[in-house]
Image (cartoon, rainbow, N blue to C red; front, top):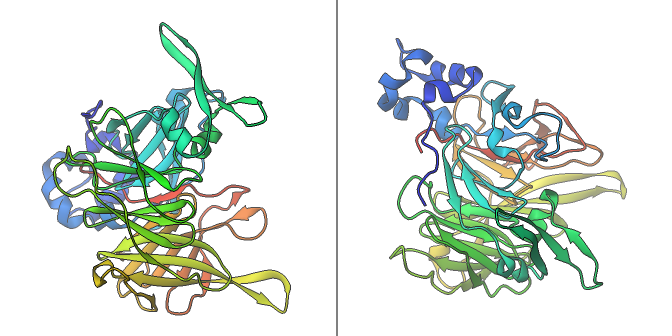
Length: 398
């Protein structure tokens, strides 16, 4: 489907704080008022736009929240500027974020309508809505009730006990999509989306322009916990560490190839959380391992990193990473996935920027040294009882 809203002019579509950040990266003689005339130099002069992610902070998406939609803002923490900036994003009113990929957010509303939003340009693209088939793949029994001539209606969940409850925004990731991952930016040809379904060994697939989702069996032993896109294929990763390849290369109208299980990673002892990402064409795993100090509370924890070359054959070998060179990795527990990029000013190399809750009621992202596994807190606003949603790299060109 085509974008339903044209990209905003960059000089007016970004808040003042972000314009100032970008202006600092422009060649000498340019300022924030001359954006239109310097778009080509931007591509070379703005490592910030491609490689300096922002941490998206929690927001209230509910339609009944006190602020009217036009006043809705979302805050992001900038590592480069070491401060929080806010963007007016009324498009997030009444929607829940179910993915952050290629600089775009995947959103679902209470009608299970799915859309993609570039929060930095305002561009939007529609994806097919979720339906009973998607929910059934997650072993959920749902139906739409109260549909009138003007559409409307709402989803309800029927439990095995016979109880019926409304599928509200906070339940969308449990009933329909846990995470949506993109193969490329929606502005180009061939953009495909793959979705993790809650408690399911199946995944849902579509291309921009499709009218419905296609369910694909991944053949993992239990359920899919994460999806990563690598070189024309989606990698579905099971909760036990299995990796299944789904090839989507070729004709845009063709059905993806059947899933092909290739590898399993023996889980390191006492690893409590795993996230996956693609770095330089290789699948990487970042795991958080627990260290108990004589049984005392609180426990210590450290990060371990593995990589897997999928071109190595049917049973590729995982190896531990102790030096990622000039790369920095950005991990989000909320979507169990992440991405890597060459470090830029104020972004430390050979490190993991980890959005992970610590023990207790507060949440503070951490910076982890890959060579030692040791971590330190990032100096950003502490979130009482909440977790940051995700890291997102601004994409200003699509």
